[in-house]
Amino acid sequence: MKYVLYSILVVIIAMSIVSCREKKSTKLSESTKKEVKLSKFAKNYPDFNPQHLKEVLQSQLQKDSILQSLYITNTFTPIWVHDTLDTQGLRELSGILENSREHGLPVNYFPIDYITSLMDSIDSGIYSHDLDILYQKMTDLELVSTRSAIKYITGMNYGFTDPKILYKKDYDIYTARPDSIFFINLYANLQKNPIKPVLSSTPNDLVYNKILEEYRNLESKKNIALSKITTSKTYKIGDKSSDISEIARRLILTGEYKPDSIETDSLHQTLDKNLLAAVNTFRRKNSYPEEDEVGKITIDALNRPLEYYQDKLRANMERYRWRRTKSKHDKHIEVNVAPAILFASQKDSLPLITRVCVGSVTNKTPLLESDISYLNLNPIWNVPTSIAQKEVAVLQKKDPTYIKRNNMKLYKGGKEVDVESINWKEVNPSKFAYTIRQNSGERNALGLIKFMFNNAFSIYLHDTPSKAAFSRKNRAVSHGCVRVQKPFDLAFFCMSAISNDLYKDRLYYSIDKLPISSEGKKLAKENKLKKLPDILNPKDKISLFIDYYTAYMYPDDNGTLYYADDVYEYDSVILNALDMEVAKKSKPI
Image (cartoon, one colour):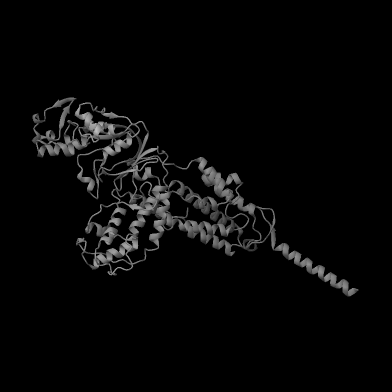
């Protein structure tokens, strides 16, 4: 009997010991109030006091009014370091920040190394003998992680730079900026699940996703070695050369050339029609004119490293993160200055796509938003003072017939002045004080029609007598206005609510062009075809954006990404601004 009692006592003592051990290996969770197993953090820091961490956090945030409003709503409860260390969430955040390079942000844009080193040092238990340091390190980790998450989410939603600061006076497009409602919602979402709002903040725009896909594609190929094509020759169909083989190799790498596997020319040393077609696809994708030969301009473009395109993609991802506030109307005109192309689109209709000429590097076309207000047939050009002084007066001194030949007249004080009454040899062009007006007609610099819209720069879209420039690769040649290659197609687009074949004939007839339809010709012959007034008012609202993208897609084209030369060097402005953000950091954000 004694043996039985002894055995029972041993069992009870053993169970008590086990029970005590279990209690020591568990704790009551601050957040769930349930019994949970002790984490590695809790074992390393058994005397850790979550309430004291809140007090340290609250004290630290007295110097930070922005983050204080986030934490004060939750009584300063940490987001990343609750009553333990959320290593999983922090590592997930670090991974997302690391992948921000795919979104065009430079390396070290976020303090990933600092976050990781803080987390690892705390997780290792090295502060177990000095809890004051532990609380400070945990506070640092909490705040740097939260600031990084907010910066990432805000940047992905609105851009990491401000175009009005970057482009200064040449930018008049309103873009959304984060407001108090945005931050209230952001703070609430971070407190619920800090990773979810970070993950869901990346843009989901069709073009943005295409740019991101292309960036990843180029990143996977950037270590492939390419030899520079050094020739200055021009190659035509049938020519054979090792340079042509290198051209083919580059086009295979970038995807434009997909040779048939049964081709006899396995080295691709001959410029055949298939390879030339691939070269022209490359040209189209780079906004260059197609040709039936391959010369220096194309070879220079082919010699560009893949990083050249990655930089373009980086800059344009930032552009697509800028969110315009002005909505597009059902009828919409978009001028992309970089490739000098105009798109006019309307719901359920094929878009009108036409080349344009834009401002030169010294006379940049400003970037703006507006609505088309009216069309002006047979416009008169009031020559700006800068052009009158720098061009017209200079040319008139060289050629005394210039002003009359170009159908121009001089005015002073509102009264016409005889051109021949001026001694042009004594004229100082920089002080030329006459007003110059060019009458309407074929030689008018504005052509036969211009498209007016409210803007702060006194520019407009217009026709031009100088048609040759539209066939050039570089069409940045104007004084700032946008010259349209197909002005009458654009006019019909604007007036389509009231436009028919007879209306089109009346428009042509109004600018002294022959009607096209049989009815129009008949009425003109009978002197019954009525001209339109010089001012035409569209019935539909037509939104207009003049903007700048060096990586873009055509309307209704879900497949191909196109590139344009950075004629105004605005890509560099964006990339430099992003890089400077890294360079100026003397300590973590």
